[in-house]
Length: 243
Image (cartoon, rainbow, N blue to C red; front, side, top):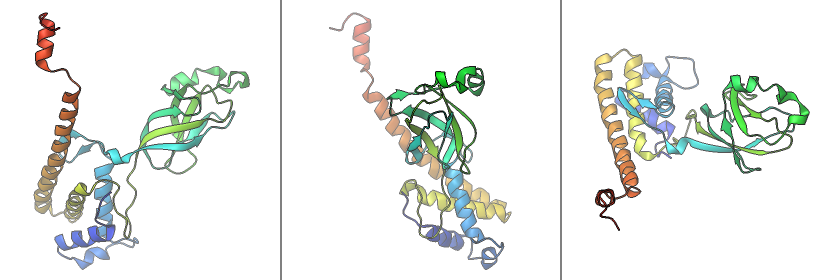
């Protein structure tokens, strides 16, 4: 989790943007524009796979969630995802039967004409995402075969960043606080059409992001190398020199 609160983000962004009082009363929203820019920056950072001008994919481990509250009902063809899901689930697991469900496209599911037949109900083996769920933001995960009983379904997904308010902090690490602040400042310059200041600020943001991701990539290389055979052993085995 981060360290800076929403209120602190707003205060620091306001200072960097020149303490403009007109921005605070520019809309009739409950939050002034400084708060709007902070949340825009936070959500843009967390809800995308690529960053401003950088051809680098990145996922925040802190936002990878498993939901254990999706229980099936006999005869009901789907369960709802949480409303906080971003995109579609990554994996679906039946904890009751200890089965990893396989993904299938909607067209495949439509062809299963026995899905409404009571005699064909069983423990689910496949999952399909289609349509909006009951709660705003949720999605329907259809199951096949249609469940014949109650099963505890684990849905693994990436969580959306929620709106920051008051003393709330971010879901991601403290190392991203400064970047979120500078991105909020960028949002301010963009809304105010101060493009020269925006260009200067966005270059600082890009460099900071690249620095953090570069550190993560070094860690990934170290992990990969730890499970690979040493090259000298590989050469010996290839030429018959290994024992």
